[in-house]
Image (tube, rainbow, N blue to C red; front, side, top):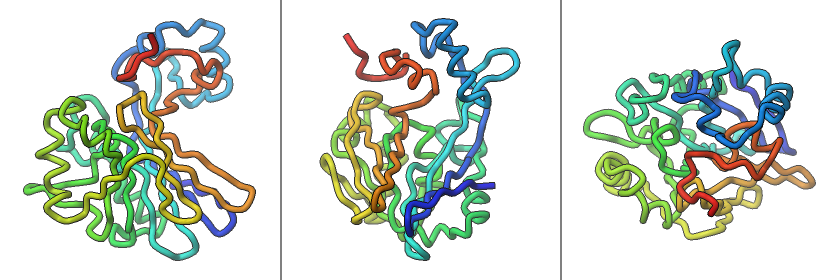
Length: 236
């Protein structure tokens, strides 16, 4: 079942599209992490490791809603069985059922923020053949730097994702920090991809940062200087 947290009148709901073991050993994903750092990460987040030491990864989207107003969805999961992430992620995802369990109809979503364009974050954005936006009333927000790099991120993105969104008039390109509502702000956080963005949700004195793949594992909080092997902009 979806898990929610409230910040004043705002509800942020974590929606689990799928979960499964990462496609490579976690020691390859974080090659410089020490045994002590892994032990501390596992102590803080025991659900992220299997009995045989694999990285157990949860693929999530987040729904942000003020009262009973329209929904802002952060990321679009791994998608159905024929989604781009099928080559490595545990498809099909269950996002439609998670949305229903949270009382959200796809038509209630008026904004989809794609933190970046990797395949496990865009799966339900466009579905079917020919591709159509899964959320019929939503603007899909992508940073211009991410859009400019789409071909290098995945050669299939322009035709499979961007063209259908443009044809439907639902692609919205943003440049840098952008205020969506008084409570929701987009913050550029490049590195994992050129146009990666995070979402800051604020209400009075409460704040929540939805980080996309800026943060992927607890070991990065144990030591923020640890390099993740799948960053496009690696530290020199």
